Image (cartoon, rainbow, N blue to C red; front, side, top):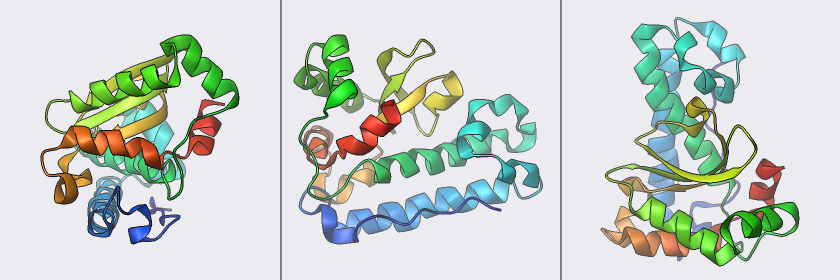
Length: 200
């Protein structure tokens, strides 16, 4: 069974005015779809990998045949990261986390606002295209990291909890070069229930 492009949980225009409908349509229907199709094409001759989750595929790229490893790293990362991206945002969201995630963020970063400031700054500072991440490390500790292009934290032994997409296709139609404005507004779309489940 090939990897499938997940449907969005909301309409293209549901994230207005923070994300415009045209950007969401192109980002999901073109970019995310292309990553999905090219991942499937790369693995076409190796159908055993379709029996695995994308997390398992990316967690040990050394087991991927060398001839398609770069394609799987790039397109598999793009597929997986966008799955996380769309699932963690939604209309009428934002606010603040509760429970164990809220306590963990306070303990690690001092406050929710300090955490948001730190992850925003790291994401905005990514050179070129890439992602900002809140992850768990191998000890279960929360860490902020960034990755270039579609390199995945999961390939480095991290567990992704929350991500910020700073590829230009995520924001350019509405925000042009104002990546900082896009990142600031992004927090108003976060579905903290989804992020808390990932943390748990």
